[in-house]
Length: 104
Image (cartoon, rainbow, N blue to C red; front, side, top):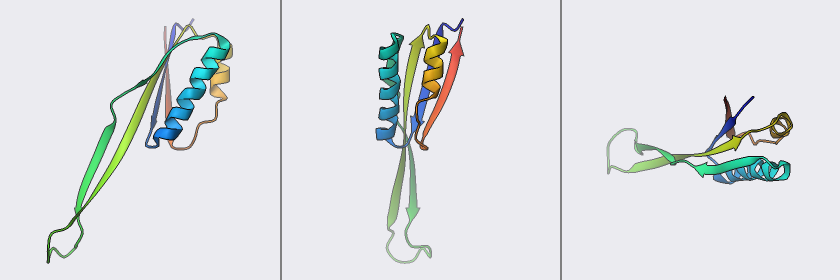
């Protein structure tokens, strides 16, 4: 029997991430399953600074790019098989990555 299910959601688009987390939360409330989360984890920021002028001559101007990676963790306590099957049926956008770990 699975005692705990940990769902990790990762995305660069925070709106899609929040909508998927909200769907999981609503599903748990409908089925009467105990849920903890969604817990926001620290946002990773990947920064890249590049020189605009490829020749290196002239004034130094830089372009700065940043990619933010958002993450949410949801813990489901004592999920039954019905809940897991319904959870697999939730539509997940392309830019949201999901990882499910079952803990006994």
